[in-house]
Length: 302
Image 1: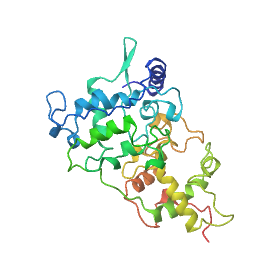
Image 2: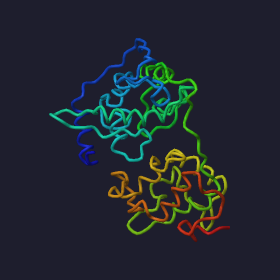
Image 3: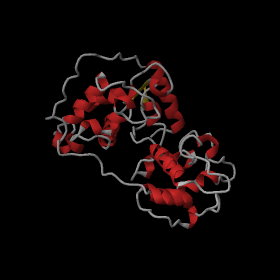
């Protein structure tokens, strides 16, 4: 594996060197459901997905040049290899002889991770399709921007047909519920209780999940519900390692993201507060009884 700082340089090189691929309006070719590449049948691959078609037609979409460096103007790899929190876990690219690429072994690893985000039994519900799709077309919020304005976009159709070619009995990953009561009692106070050398979350995220509480009082249930719904955009239920909520405030030396303007709240994954939050994201912590690492006197309870 290459370092994250070098990975960022490689991704920049990709953006500068890869030739833009214009969108094709013709219908994409249907992937084969009989061969998965390397002599392996699709029945032996995750969810019966066609690996050969993935490598040839789906994986190149992740490095497709889009004309810029931010949001929907940049390639998927700009966030999904550098950011440790990205659910679409792409392996950092390899550099050799002036080129950047994924090796066969790396593509196989990418394939395993991508398969976790698809649902052959109902392709349109796959996270791989929902995130880059405009909410007006049925998609979800995506911090990387909107790539597809409609389900008729050629990239959407190609990926959708690839997913549909998988095992029709293979569904989505099990859904884990994160508990609202635990959030309201134990998680939400974190936002107004900063540590040394870090700003309170409300400083930057007051318009999102870190809604300031009423003066000298606790949040109302309605305020907590609003904050909870906003925070879920940064939480991958059941998968702490892919939750931005747990990676942004974590120091890069401990595996956190490279950038967080609010400072670093945790310098180790073993931090008791972070471990308590991991248990919540996994779905293990429920109710209003808080572990010692998540007990705060501020704001006061009414």
